[in-house]
Image 1 (cartoon, one colour):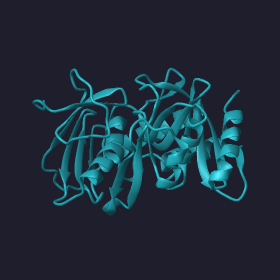
Image 2 (cartoon, helix red, strand yellow):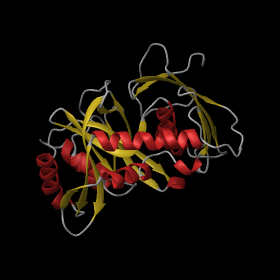
Image 3 (cartoon, helix red, strand yellow):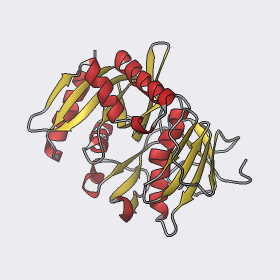
Image 4 (tube, helix red, strand yellow):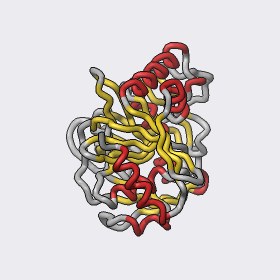
Amino acid sequence: MIAEAPIYSAYGLSIASELPLPELPSTAGPADIFIRLGAVPHVGHRTTLREQYVYGTQAGAFHVTNGDTIVADPLPGAEAVAVRIVLLGRVMASLLWQRGWLPLHASGVIIGRKGVLFVAPSGTGKSTVAAALHARGHAVITDDVAPVAVHQGVCRVLPSWPRLRLTADTLGMLDASGTPQLLSARTLQIDKYNVALRQPRMQEPVPLHRIYFLESGTEMTIEPVATPLAVASLNAQSFIRQRRCDVDAALHHLKGCAAIAGAVRLSRITNVRGRLRLAELSTMIEEDSVD
């Protein structure tokens, strides 16, 4: 237990943390997750279903265990914002994976009461597309980490908290709640704004209807992705590094990717970058995501 630590809320969970997490909403009550400061040794340990070490982040080392505990060991002089970005991104993704969710590198919105995710590497416009759709009235589910799981044949995505991380040139698209907070982490090469959104906070998992793999191109197209390629793409765009897993963890991870590919329609979007094309792209997504 962490005595008198602040309690925050994200992904439907209560988080007690010795590290301040100003990006997260505060809450009360018993904690589901505990984040504490401590020494994390550098060991040659492969990821298992219950334990993972996270290194090489330029923010510090982290030890994630049992789906409920994170030990953070920041590097001396590490930027506090860099530590938080890594902790609430890659490290939290590892913890959610231990709790039974496949953490995809994605942003998502609700269209027609169902979830739609945009999966892609950093810097490819996931948050910008989500912002464009939010400006058209669609609530944001998550940004950066999208935990997905199939239960009784239904795929669901776990909401994070109502915010988007945007570059300065896209801030004008949204009616933010309060002043956007600059997240500038030199060591991570991140210079974005954390934008709180004017929408209710979601707590329950959302049924997932579509997953779009976002790519840049010269023409706007949406085309289906065959299941074998979809499994490979989900594996590549998850926060779990299969090559660092032991046999049981790697098999569990691939089964999770296959289950999602079998339960959700997956498509590839070729996106022509540029503000003037966002309205066209948004219309295409709205039309394609309605059965």
